[in-house]
Image (cartoon, rainbow over the protein chains, first blue to last red):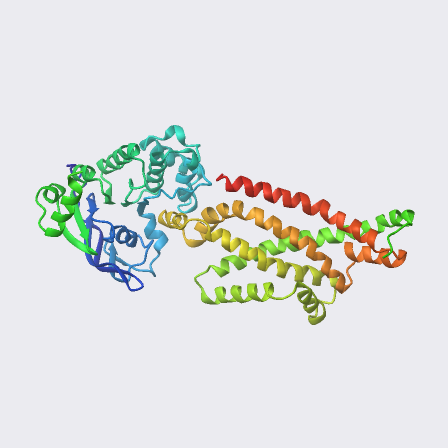
Length: 252
Length: 216
């Protein structure tokens, strides 16, 4: 397991009784969650458990139905300055969501330029730094449709990092990838983790969870069922629900 | 039916007919430009979160698309204080075109995947930045073919302004017909003049449509 390189205790984000419904359909309820600076939390669980919707509620891409979200101690709701808050929370999506009309470089520079007001030169420097970090310095002038799935996702990671966020959200970042591209993306996320980035990762990749996470949350049946270290969870699950889940997936 | 034998009179009248062309073209050009600008705002209103804006756009679009353009031209010219025929024609044609363009743009904006807006918001853009830098640039490529078709339709519709006395192509052709007692030939020539503009525009739209549907 990786060491927590910035051992602070400041709560980057906290939720209290967070609940989301789509109409009458309950997605998750009463989720009490927190993450501290430098922590790497993996959320795992069966499909339909509400994992993705939960992390989408953390940067208000989706609005929670009830409950509270606190970011660095400040309560955030739909009346908050959400663009400002989202600048501090990077997000990587399952389907990449790169901007198809922009090159890889422009995908990364557009927000620093238009949102932060950086000059093109400054933004290019930052973008090149992060695109090199994700191993794509030679592909910067390519458009998304000229990149492989793995490359797209790495550009998306660079795009989020270029805003220099305090927290990164990864929403099933490898679920839409061909098998042979999963590793390059996971390695990239691990590299970001090693540098001390606080992150929440929704994933089905068990070996990644074991290696990178210092806390694991098991969500099922629309709530948090179990919370422990990855080692504990995979070797000694406490609940029957977790045992059933692990029985289904581990013997692959 | 009398089909013209007096060829020299017919050919002699072509310059007179051509005098109607600048009016047809300027009505088409100005009204389509205004229609596109106004149509874009209507489209943004129709997808906005604000109920009043959305309601206004919906009523406007339904009212304009559900009534004859001829009626709209006459309402603007006879029913409002705008005394002059040319501005009245421009206003009526722009109002009409905007409603059709708005629906093209709305469909175009809504055809962009939801993930694009989410990604734009996630990097800290506000709604209008996301629209301006991410959604609309992608929409423009998709709406160029149907908008070109709309301009073609508008060009043909400009002939209706003859009812308020504007001497565009069809009006001129009819005048020649009255003077020479031969309507068929000048009206036919007017038709050919429309085709010189509408066929290339239609072909251009089709070509773009083909290119975009190949997933460019």
